[in-house]
Image (cartoon, rainbow, N blue to C red):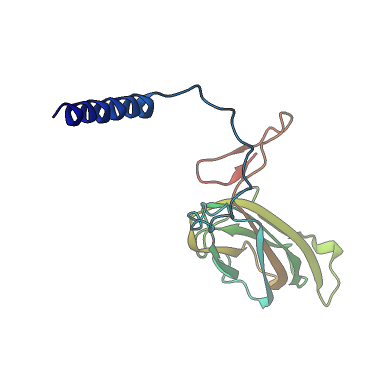
Amino acid sequence: MKPLVHLRVRIVGVLAVALIIATCKGDAGAAGPTGPMGAIGAAGAPGAAGATGPAGVVWKGVSFSFAAPGAVGTTVNAATLTFTAPSAGFVWVEASGYCNVTQGPASAQASLGWTTTSAGTPTIPNSAFIHSAVLSEAAAGTQIPYGVSGVFSVATGANSLYLTLHNWSAGVNDCSGTGILIFSSSLLPLASTNAGALSTAGVRVP
């Protein structure tokens, strides 16, 4: 039986040595060379859309012919500019043209101006006064030119501005002209030498 015991002892010894060798670690070897770059992955989903920028400058025009005034002392609309503002902002509006007047015992007088109220009374500086001296008029009448402009604040959406004609005296037959409106989301700052200011209603005043 002794040979069998010795064999077992040897087998156990060999296994123990093998286990020690398996569990022992030597020093780390040098790093190998960098491998080739892998394939580029699929593109990700697009990001959310950014906020919409402010509206740029837009404009609109209107023409009118032979707008007759009302009775002396009354105001009528010579033209109406209705527009849709893309955002809150400001508009500069201008009108120029002429009025037909006839010679009479007194000078013919009228005023035209831009307002936010239909048939409203325009205020300086959004109005122009038309005055014809009797001595300068031809017997058949004459044409008196005018020009008027103003700045107004507007809200987003539908807006209307009115070029009103106020009749101060007899002799003004009719007025014709062209109006132009330009919208901007902001105003340039006033220069320090400009005594004007922007009223709470959005109308530039002296």
